[in-house]
Length: 172
Figure: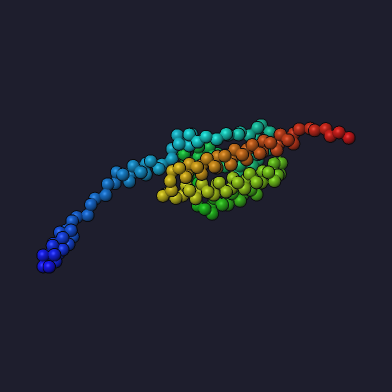
């Protein structure tokens, strides 16, 4: 019985004397570098991009918030997330101004719904871009969703102005 107590005591004392193991920091640094989103990652995203027609460009030329968003989308394609890392209050003010300043020439329920979808995707990417522990795949999916929402807004603006420019004679 004494032998069992002695061996247990010896085991306890010998295991307490071990030094803590050093953590390999190169693994952590490599993981952070792997999680960084690059321009090449964004270029690999597959989606159909619609540009504005000449009439549509004229219609949105006075819509300053659209121009700002378009510029920031182009910066996003180059992996510049500075717009999406703004403070939340500033970001929400931008979105509210974007919706409020929609020109009357392109205002319609279809455009409003595309703007609402775009607003949702902007807020989602804003949240993802400001988190440090989020997976790269999730952020890339949010980027793709935003790019698709923006291009769908462009497509809807083109469709609306194209439909309005058609002269359809109705039979009597």
